[in-house]
Image 1 (spheres, rainbow, N blue to C red):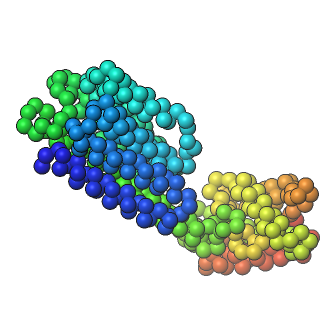
Image 2 (cartoon, rainbow, N blue to C red; image 1 turned 90 degrees about the horizontal axis):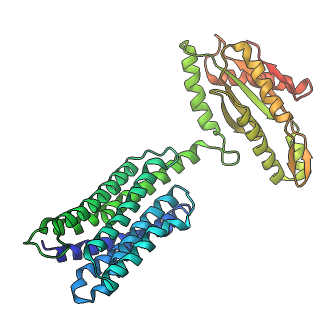
Image 3 (cartoon, rainbow, N blue to C red; image 1 turned 45 degrees about the vertical axis):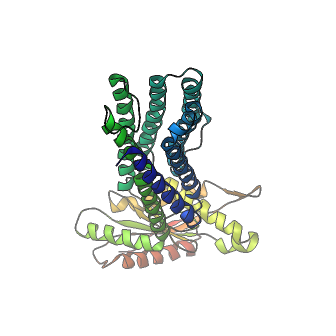
Length: 387
């Protein structure tokens, strides 16, 4: 297959991928739409460059070369930007500097002072730099994401960048230039160039879409495990985590204690200030509980104005002290809304796992009895359950 045919096929595949991204755009979450749009524009730029490369000998070099090479540099920069947007990294004006400098240099070496080796070296240097920057973003970014599609895309960016650098070195050392000649020296690299450069807009787009799909899947998993108002683990996640810790403690692997917490006089806050203030009060309490958690403490919203903390304590005797730490954290940080400071306190019932406990639910019932005892004795206090 000659290079012109390869360019045509690659262009059609790039355009198809750009169209797929365009059709899927509105179906993506709002948080992913900007990076998907940037990726689509970058793909279309590379498709446009492929068209120009295919007809480059039909147009003046000083016109077609800056346009085609500029599209390549801007397209690769667009991919880099899309990855940064995917990771929530803000745009920086200096990201455009390599492409702008490269386009200026190509204009000079193609139209003003024609110099093919310098033009190839400049283009390759910019593209290789941007692709390596994209590789680093994929490797170092992602806030802990280690999806296989991300690793595959990082490998693809690196390999294409490596090929671009090798291609420039090959042309400079062999003293030949890129062409559509498939019989002379450099024929193999001329044939390979459109195939390799098409990997990013074709295979790379598939990997990028997998990244988006996996991000959506993780967001759904997080939503299913998290309380929408406070951001803490919800009751479902609490029961699953508590059951695991209960079983481990029964086997002698650790000690388990839990605190069942209720916000004092929460109904008065709702009635006196409205449900919106009540919601913010719950968020305030959740934040204080989370901030005062230690070690493997697990904080969850149990429902309504109730919270549960699975306590990481070395001995059951430390459970009451841990409950006091949580109580003091809330009582010592007034809740402020609309310029008004509202004191908020909590009551807590603490249950340490006992030999008679057959399940986590039994511990929760004992903690509930202790919580009611704390309320009867004046609130803003911690009581230990019997057992």
